[in-house]
Amino acid sequence: MKFVFAFLLPLLLYSLTYFAPPGKIEKFDHFWFVLTWPPSFCEENVDRCRPATLNFTIHGLWPTDAEGNTLNTSMQPDANISFINDTSSPLVRNLNDYWPTFCKDRTNEWLWEHEWKKHGCTQAQVEPEDYFEKAVTLITNTISRNILSALIVGGLEPGDSRYQVSGFISVISNITGTGTVMLRCKNETLQELRLCVKDDAFTECSGKKEKNKTLDSCGSQGTYIRFPAPPRLP
Ligand SMILES: *[C@@H]1O[C@H](CO)[C@@H](O)[C@H](O)[C@H]1NC(C)=O
Ligand SMILES: *[C@@H]1O[C@H](CO)[C@@H](O)[C@H](O)[C@H]1NC(C)=O
Ligand SMILES: *[C@@H]1O[C@H](CO)[C@@H](O)[C@H](O)[C@H]1NC(C)=O
Ligand SMILES: *[C@@H]1O[C@H](CO)[C@@H](O)[C@H](O)[C@H]1NC(C)=O
Ligand SMILES: *[C@@H]1O[C@H](CO)[C@@H](O)[C@H](O)[C@H]1NC(C)=O
Ligand SMILES: *[C@@H]1O[C@H](CO)[C@@H](O)[C@H](O)[C@H]1NC(C)=O
Ligand SMILES: *[C@@H]1O[C@H](CO)[C@@H](O)[C@H](O)[C@H]1NC(C)=O
Image (tube, rainbow, N blue to C red; front, side):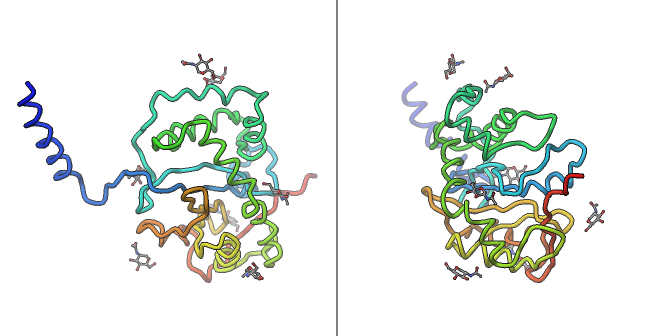
């Protein structure tokens, strides 16, 4: 038995290595810290949206491999995240402030559980509670707090105007000090910012899959995109 095992194991490892499709690394390297621009989300989902706040909120914290592929294999399938239902905890109060859903037909707890199951659980390195704490720490740190004000100071004020993609990239990559930010648009409207985080610090998004994501669906550096404010209440 021992002999068979000793024989088979290296063979198994060898075949796994040998047949693994190239480019499928699936090994945790860093996070994407994904921030939503709520007014854009609510424009898209007019009928199911709570009033949008005029500030970036968390969409998720997505583990990726070194190339920038989001990981898909659950490393913590049985993690107990029932603490997200404890409305008296300071963590949950922060999550309600910074990681809300704007969908009327969803609860915030639904969003957190969804993000954990889709993304959080794919890395083994972070305990569930630390994962959510990490997201709160990232959005309350000075850089994140200053993103909106830096954009406004840079002349990119939410409202009816359109601004060039290059403007967003230079202001945001300037304040994060990383030289990069990934933008996501729909219909030439800014939806999301995606920042790379490694060892608790913002870092350059340098993965093969990330370099081109700077402009993901936002057009080119010169494209003018919308950065809407929430609609005025009647
Ligand atoms: C994970 O799934 C997404 C969507 O199906 C895919 O785009 C991505 O490449 C996958 N990541 C890996 C590492 O296979
Ligand atoms: C999950 O953790 C809570 C405490 O946070 C505990 O009360 C509950 O029994 C745990 N559930 C399981 C299935 O282990
Ligand atoms: C939180 O509470 C809701 C409603 O009771 C329940 O459906 C959900 O499974 C709970 N979530 C977790 C992670 O325990
Ligand atoms: C946006 O939120 C941050 C905290 O995440 C806060 O410090 C900042 O003042 C807010 N900005 C506005 C314009 O409300
Ligand atoms: C970059 O940041 C410095 C201060 O840290 C500021 O003086 C400069 O105006 C910023 N540039 C842009 C394009 O935001
Ligand atoms: C795209 O945005 C324009 C306004 O800039 C709007 O008129 C148009 O209906 C939008 N298209 C879609 C498919 O949402
Ligand atoms: C990045 O985009 C440029 C042009 O937009 C393209 O020529 C290049 O092949 C892309 N690189 C990757 C790695 O996808």
